[in-house]
Amino acid sequence: MFPGRFIDFSDWNFRNPFSEFERMRQEMNRLSEGFRRSAPFSTPAGVFPLTNLSEDTDNYYVRAELPGLKAEDIDISATDNNISISGERVIPGENNNVRYHRRERESGKFSRVISLPGTIDSDKVEAKFTDGILTIVLPKSEAMKPKQIEVK
Image (cartoon, rainbow, N blue to C red; front, side, top):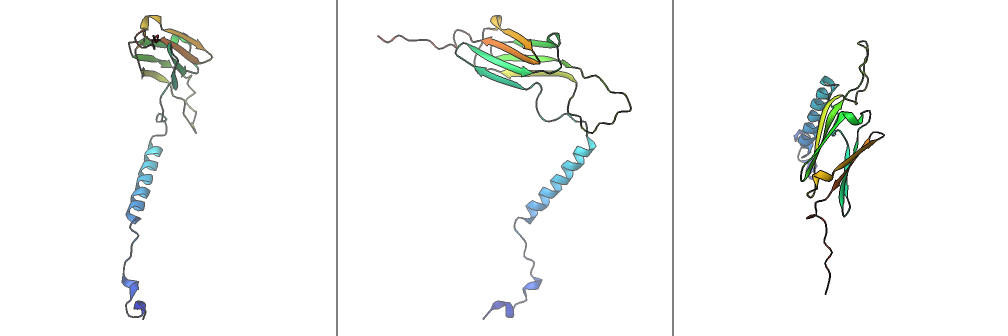
C-alpha cells in the first residue's frame, strides 16, 4: 500500500533546509548593491601603490608602481625592518560638466608601510625611479646575511 493514498501531503509545508541561507544571500546582495549605488566614487579595493617585495642573499628589493608621479613627489623612509613610501598623486581635474561612467583613478595623499622579513642597513638604502616604477634596494644587515661555515 502506498501512504500517499491515505495521507494528503499537499498541506504539508516541506522546506528546503538551505532556503533561509538563500534568502539571506539575496538580502545581502540587495543591500550591497544599494551601497554601491549610493557611493559611486568610493575608493576601489586594493592598496596604492602596488608593490612587490623580493630578496636575494644580500638585499631586499621593493618595486612599486607609481604611474604619473615624479621622483620629487615620493618620500621614502627606512627603519630596521620597515620601509615607508608616501606622497601625493594629483590627477588633473575635469570641467564641471563632466559626468563619469567609471572612476577608478583616485588622487590624493597615500602612504604605504611594508614590513620586511628581517633587518636592514638603513644607511645604505638606494632608490631609483624609472618609467613609473620605483625600485628600492635594501641591503640586509650583516646579522641577517648567511654565514659560510668552514667544515674542519
